[in-house]
Image (tube, rainbow, N blue to C red; front, side):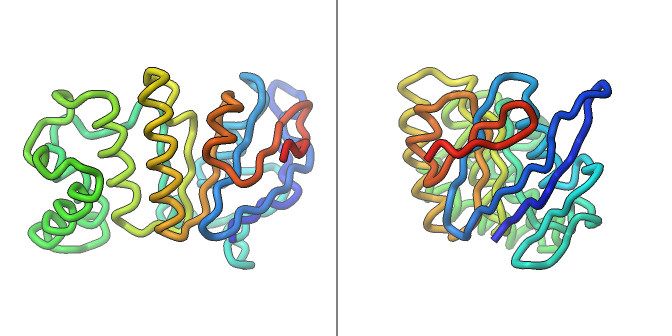
Length: 214
């Protein structure tokens, strides 16, 4: 379980997060909604270890990981721009995290091909990422995130750059893969329909505080 406790953060002298707390269970997606500038992405970055909280704790399975660097937390992040490596082909983009963890390149590529097959991209292993459609790139990004078996998946507006039909299709795919992997997922979005399609629970961040939506 991922847990945020009493998170405080100021921005330009004003309280952005005022004692925010939430829990995300294994295999569950929790959505975080709110207006632009409400602090949603900041809270996600605090969970990831990319930004410190002024007060409060980040815990995983009851262990305080607030002081841990991002690479030690074992979380995967996905953003709306996909953040794929343009100098690597599809297979090596997906294998990248395993190689960084010390796995041999050949074995990592083998695992990447298996993961790509799960996402219907077996024939794209040697393609350059910029030749793929937006939906295909987003599937590559998810495959890359899941292959390292992260403890939690942090999603920041992952579908906002895609058209409506593709967003609907990928929401369903992501929800299925997250549940199968049994990981915690925290979804930041401004789209309530997207949140309802993916999340078991949702909160709205407003005035530095969370209000339950469902």
